[in-house]
Length: 222
Image (tube, rainbow, N blue to C red):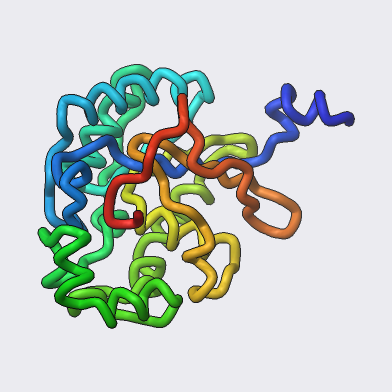
């Protein structure tokens, strides 16, 4: 079948995983590291979620799972409202716990923990603020995503609503990349998403940081 048929015929598409980052929070705007702190959406973030949900609903999702933190769960709720799907909340999809970094601005982290920050950006295994390693985040999040993906029909679509850092580490793990190379995946803007498709040799990255219009990346994964 030609390329056009592969796009239009759902029977040949295979399973898809859409990893959708939550909408904007006040801490995103202030460049404060959120981590596992439960910060709510701003009015702008709610608007972003509603706009993105209309696009994602058109992709015909079959299952929605979400981090149980309110910024992700409330983003997921906008898609659930349009599709009539239930949301399964998963603690394993939370953002990276970053200890004493949480609540600090980007500038404060650089000032107080500059060497630790630089080591993280070099791809070294770092417990930012005494928190989780990126590999530990992948260890808890990727199996959650795979468990739900394995239950999909052969052409089903799973929407995963989570956080920038957790999405990046999960994509890296599902693609089989070395942990030190996960940083090569750019961050996600608020309410943008990435798409993984099932291929003959495993999961493939089909889209990254997709959305309505390009927007700056604000948050822990800047």
